[in-house]
Amino acid sequence: MLAESNGRVMTFAGRETLDLTDHGSIEGLIAAVAPSAVINAAAYTAVDRAESEADAAYFLNRDAPAAMARACAARGLPFVHFSTDYVFDGALGRPYTETDPVGPTSVYGSSKLAGEQAVSAAGGLAATLRTSWVYSRHGANFVKTMLRLAADRDELSIVADQLGRPTWARDCAEAALLTADALAATPSLSGVYHLSGAGDATWADLASAVFDISAARGGVSARVKRITTADYPTPAKRPANSCLDCGKIEAVLPWRCRPWRDSLAACMTEMEL
Ligand SMILES: NC(=O)c1ccc[n+]([C@@H]2O[C@H](COP(=O)([O-])OP(=O)(O)OC[C@H]3O[C@@H](n4cnc5c(N)ncnc54)[C@H](OP(=O)(O)O)[C@@H]3O)[C@@H](O)[C@H]2O)c1
Image 1 (spheres, rainbow, N blue to C red):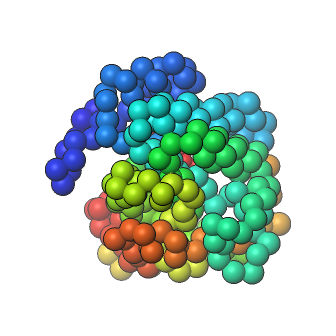
Image 2: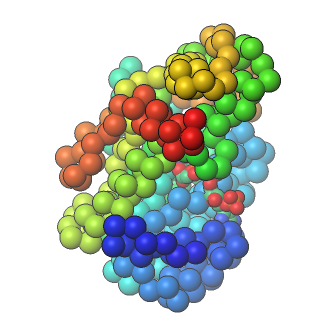
């Protein structure tokens, strides 16, 4: 699919165009499109299912970005790759910087970390953007799930002891495009960056904010019962704190983290809520 925005022509390669389990087709598509940069937002993102499907997670999260990074490096193309806050163990008492030690607690986090390392090893113009708690009007995500569940229930039990930074996919997309430009102009900017909304939240805080905005606009709402991680066991262990410090990317891009409540309200406007 082709789209044009702010003078950029973008080719979007979804599953129907590019099967990422076929690494030859990655090389073939990049050769055929001859882009000026490549951005990879595809991944194996089923965090709990990954615990029992490690091979599939590593194939998508390590081997596919490795193939993209090698194809870009061979052509001197900037490559922007998304990774995750789940590369950290969550034990730190402050937001994580890019130099803090990693320590994933799940197969998903480990496979994404292996992807970061493979991208770096390819040696080209490459930036890995670790993001967190992403939502948008597209696809399945926490914000849409809350709105769907509130249509049928008066009260929802939501985890209130995991801390993170909610991020609107549109903010990520803008930063990714600027990162590709920056890499082309300044190859030494290759490396890992943190990219999220500004301000900390628990999942319960995020749910409450969704319902506050929705109710104020005449939409669905539900009471939020704050529960602990122990009350809601999952196959994959999540970090208790995965707040990302975005100072590094803000220092090199003409881009600023937006307060997460502002981005959430803007996203819900885009969703016509
Ligand atoms: N969502 C979050 O909260 C979050 C947090 C931190 C980091 N991230 C990272 O941000 C990036 C985007 O995440 P997301 O939430 O947008 O993920 P998502 O909604 O699960 O989207 C992943 C995309 O990858 C595509 N894909 C999966 N397997 C494929 C294959 N074999 N061939 C071609 N395409 C395939 C999917 O296609 P289909 O739609 O056809 O399945 C989907 O479009 C990922 O790198 C993720 O690790 C996300």
